[in-house]
Length: 167
Image (cartoon, rainbow, N blue to C red; front, side):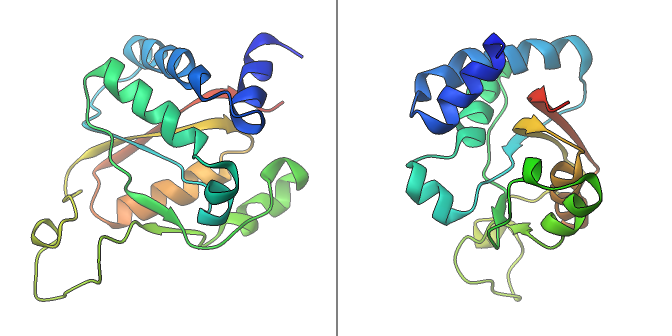
């Protein structure tokens, strides 16, 4: 097991939250080298049951650390609306179906159609470029599902970056 894989495993399963800072800094360093146009950093959320069980969301910790390093705001823009199976447990063909409709914009109180998004306490994503952060990418199905929600909400673009990719 390589160093990065071991660090991610410790972050996710051994409560080693302190590892989020150097991994988030590595994300930021890579983004500065290859990325552009980002205004907001957000993360791919775990389901609330998983967060309650673990005590934290590892992707949120990574995104917050990266955002600080990049000097950008981190916003929790998404919520996972239903629990899904771990993508690595599935074949390539089943991964998109697993995360289909599993994400939505994060709710900030009950929606009030008579008020604009900003007046409801929701940030406007209109014409904003979002950097989506996750720990590991497998096929990209989860990132694509999240990006679709953000684009539908008005984002002009969504880029994604992860600590690692599954082979």
